[in-house]
Structure formats: C-alpha cells, structure tokens
Image (cartoon, rainbow, N blue to C red; front, side):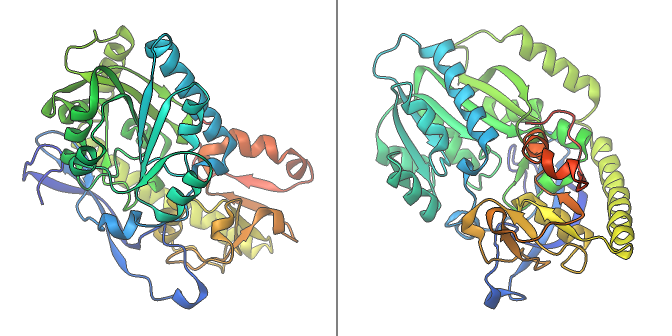
Length: 401
C-alpha cells in the first residue's frame, strides 16, 4: 500500500487486531454467521508518521446506510451546541447571511444548533436512513458522499465547514480536502474534530480502531495533510468528547496567526514521543495485556454466577468484543438506547441488542462499552449503582464527557 497522507511506500504494520467484521453491521437473525470478515491492522508510515489501516472496506459498504445516530446521546448534542456557539462567537457573531456545510452530518444534530444561531445550513450525509431522518427534522441534507464532484454540484461557498468525527473516515481523502479548500470562503473556518492518537494510547482505547476509522491523526500528521492542500490549523484544544478528541480550527494558509495554545500542544505532543514507531509497538504490547486482564475479569465473574450485560452497543465496542473473543456466553445482551438496533445482533460475536426502555431484568454487572460517556452514564444510573449493580469500565478515559 501507499500512505494515505503522503503517498510513501515505507509502511510498516504495528498493531494487528485480527480478522474482524465491519463493526457497524449489526445483524438481523437471518444474517448471523454470514457477515464477512476483514483484516484489521494499523500500519505506520516511516516518512510522515501517520498511523492508518492497511486495508479499506469500501465506503459504499460502510457508509451507504447504517444505524448510528448522533442525537441519541445528550452529552454529544450538548457538545455540538457548545461548538456551534463557540465558532459563532469567535468568528461570525456580527456576520450577515452566515452559512455552514457539515460533512457526514448524520441526523442533523450539529446543524440544528447552527440553525438556532440563524445559519443557513446544509448537511452532506452518505447514509440513506440518517439523511432521511435529518430532512424530516427540517435540516436540509444531501444524501451523497462528500468530495470534489459533490462540491462542484453544490456550487456555493461557505463560512464554515464542519467535520465532526468523520475526517478520519475518508477513503477519498485528498478529494475531500480539495473540496473544502475550494468551497471555503477566504476568511472561512473549517472546524474539524478527530480522535487524537496520543489520547487513544494514553487511555488504552484500542477499540477506537475499526474499519470506519482509516486514519489515526496526531497534530503533526494532520498538519502534513493540510499543508499539502494549502490549508493550516491555527488553533486547537483537547475536548473530553469520545474520551479525548481534538477540536481543530483550520483556514486557508496564512489567513490567521497560530495561537499560543496550539504551539504549546505541538510541543507537548513532540515531547511525548507519540509520533515515533516505538510508541505504537509498545501500544500493541499493552493491548495484548489488556485482553488477558479483561477476559480474566469476565470469566471469573461468570464462574461466580453473576449476570453480565453490556452497556451500550457502540460501533467501537465490537472491536473489543471480537478481539477479546467475548460472546453471549459471557455477556448476555447489549443494552442500547438507539431503537434502530432493536432486535439486532452484534457482528462477529452475535450478542443480542436490547433497548434500554424495554429491559425487564437487570444484571449484576454492566460491562460498559460506551465508556466515552462515562460521566453521563454514572449520573443517569446512580439508583442502580446504589442498589449494588457494578458498572465496569474496560477503558477508563482520563477525560470524559
């Protein structure tokens, strides 16, 4: 393969999570055992330092239609509202006819908050189901993959481009970057949010590695990509959302000075050594140890007669379940809010999904797969905790929404 960012052929595998199904392919009963498996392996570019998957499940398979909904989690919606308010106050408070395009806009949750601030909004969402949900909710949404051709068809310029948790999904990476550059007004701002590989390593959040996530950025590596397309990051900070994500602010090269905050973050990243291949090799070793520890915990409690349910059925949870080899013999069901997953089964391990409001029994232990919303989960389930139900977090984020 060649590097997705710099086209180098000096690529070296560093993390191998085995053969896994596409983890957002929740199964109907008649699909159980028929799902395809693919290599899930992270490679490291010796030239630009970018971590990336060395195999691509085609975007039409993963993003043509799926069951993920942004609006299900209150803390994520609150985060999106804060982002919209911050961007408006900092850059466009007094502007007239303000506009924003959201790439991978899902059910329109982010754009609803921009609508509340009087923005003209447009979502571009590849999933048919979620695009329909957004349009039905009054959020104008184009059902398409975003790339240069889509931008030409839209034929407009925008004050803001937004990409929340999708910029590391991109099979057509350079076409998307060019589309943003071409569609962004001269003083416009591209707001990007991405899982931060430095934090993934610190949290031991290896479950955030899955086929939809083709790239695993640090500040250094995303800035190499932006430089190639005439853009630059001028400010950034680490947000607690998803256990630790970068919120980056990007413009046309030279349009704004780089903040001291970003300069300090760059320095701290360099000092951490997270861009070196040795950091990935050590991460791979610690992932194997984590598997041993978690499997021992689950088997021990099951042998003691305790009932274990999974809390949440997030996409990333399937990476963990499949790598650990944990199925319904250990975890009876996955308890989920998203009703689009009612009656489905997890890919690979075939654990049934049960909707939280329809649950008739409770476990002794909740094995929390949606660990990135730790604070919200603990706050919402205080009564169960007081009654003795254990909430076990296989990943304990240092910062949490």
